[in-house]
Length: 82
Image (cartoon, rainbow, N blue to C red; front, side, top):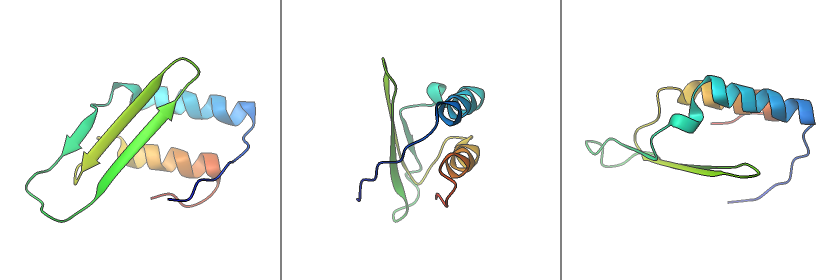
């Protein structure tokens, strides 16, 4: 996986944080899995804040708000995501 540094404005980060709060990302389960699918998608997400770290993973299953989360990333980065 390639790492990239992206500079964002304070306002863009504040708006993104509000979106994460609104769609309850910080209340997600730590792991999502659909064991009925043998081949599929594995994913992981880590959110690091000044005083907290959140890690989520999944295998063939996603949080209910996943599409809205992906949309918020696309808006923040102004590029395709997921």
